[in-house]
Every structure is written in structure tokens, then in C-alpha cells.
Length: 395
Image (cartoon, rainbow, N blue to C red; front, top):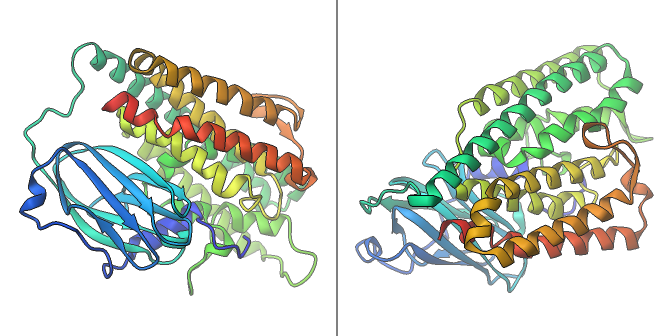
């Protein structure tokens, strides 16, 4: 809800749905791109999103994304409808290169860059041809991946169910005008959302309605969801008109309806090693681009609850993949474990009471600049090894 030009999850998804095709080019012809090993380079600038090939064979596809512009950027592989996010890599600073590793089935897709992490972005069609390869893991790895999938799927279902339960209580309090009780439940309910945020984001039609921040509204767009209610519960001292009872009911009912839709969809959502690994990294990107900056909960300042939810979700995703990661890269697993422990230790410094679903933190406005910087450094330290997780378990 700040005007700083940074990526909001929901704003990104809204913009993705209308990505412009102009300016996104390929360095090879379609016929040339039918061969190769699925490794591509991407150059993102203020006006172009150059992908080295417009096609790749099915299987592991690796996009090496370099930011050659002067603004932070992000890169997406989208489904044919431009809404479903197959994979994403965010928060790529100028001059840096980040990898996105996805296991892609044959079909039509879009590649997309978002220079500045705002606006409509730059997209182009991308095709995955049939390599004839079996995309499923084999041998001893197969059981490890299947177990990770089942465990993570169970976790997502559980969190989605808890989100529905807590959201129901929250909206009933809000509609009844019990604002103190609603404020007390707000951050606790959102913990469940934050833990499975990348899964929610993969449904491009839901996330903009449920989690859009005011600063990321497109012109003429209706503002709904958690943060619309947040502002009404923690209103600015001047220049704000409280929502009417009818408006409260409308916004609250829509949030609950969308939450139930999310829960229903998670019941049939399946995962793979690349999705779980990319999800873990995406959660830490969420921390870096919204929580550490204090932009996510601009009115309530409950960012540390969101922070903890993202860390919880990333840790569970990594833990589900640990048996496979230890087999493939024990050193990387050890590094991730160390960095998770260090970050959690810092978060624990700011706890007031409780743990798990009942944790209570200081509000973010009570943290000093030095404490925020300390958290930011720990996030960056974890993000570096965590960015290698997907490649380690899939390539």
C-alpha cells in the first residue's frame, strides 16, 4: 500500500493477464529452437525480454535470466491462458543472473519479463515440443519425489482448510462490527495464506481478488480482499471514509467465497520436485519484496506474522525434499539448514508470546532500522542456497 514501485504478488498476476507482446524477441528461428538441451538464456531490459529460443524440448527447461536493465525485474513461464504460473523468478537486481528450472510438458506457453516489477510487462509465445522423454523420475528417486509430493500436498490442503476456518471467523467478526476482535484475528488467519502463497498465486484469477495491495491497483480496478479490509480496520487518521455496513458485507463475503474456492482447488492440486523447490524460493522472494520492506501490511504493521508464514512454508517445502537433496547434494542441504536456523533465530527475537499458529510478534513499526537490516541480510543469506534447490533435485 505504499507507492514504491515494487512487485506485489497480486498486482503481478493482474498485469500478467494483460501482458504486452511487443518487445519480446527470440534470438533464434523456430526451426533452430526445436533441438537443444532445454537450456535457454533470457536478457531483460526496460523494453525487451530476449529469450534465446522460442521453443524447447519437454523435460527440464532451464531459463538463465540476466537483468541487463536498470530496474529490478522478474521472469515468468506462464500457461497458455497467461494466468497459470508454471514457474517464476523474482527480485532480480540489475546486473544479476538468476535461474528458473521447470519440468515442462509439451504445450503452448508464454515467457514474460516484468522490468520494474510493475505494469503490463513484456511477453511472447513459447512452445515446448515433445521430446519423447518420460518426465517422471525413475529409480530410487521416484519414491522420494512421490513421497515429497504427497507430504506437500497434505500440507497445502491442511493450510487451505485452516485458512477457510479462520477466515470464516474473521469475516463474521468484521461484518458484525466487532473490530477489536477482528483485528486480533487478522494476522493469525493470514498465517495460513502466507504459508501456501505460491500455490494461491498459481491460480491467477484468485490472488488479485484476495491479496491485492492498494499501491498495485490498476486504473479502474476494484479493490477487494484482505488488504481492503485491513485498511478499514486500521484506517489512516485523516482522509479516509469508513466502509458502510453493506460494503463491509460485500467485501467480506467475497473474500470468504474466494477462500473456499482456493481450498476446493487445492484438493486436486498435485506437485513435483520442481514445483516444490520453486515454491520454497518464491516464498523467500515474497519476504524480500514485501515483508522485509514493511510494505505488505502498511496499515496493521503485522508483517512479521506474514514473514513467519512465508518462512514456515519455505521450510516445509525444503524439508519434504530433504531426503532427495541429501542424496544429490548434502553440502547444499547443510547450508540451507544453517541459514534457516539463523533466520528463525532472528525472528524469534521479535516474538512477544506463543508459537506456531498462536504466535504473537511485535508490530513492524516497532523494529529499528538495524533490526530490519539484520532480517534482510538473513533473508538474502538463505535465498542464495535456496535458489539452487530446484536444480539440485531435478537436474
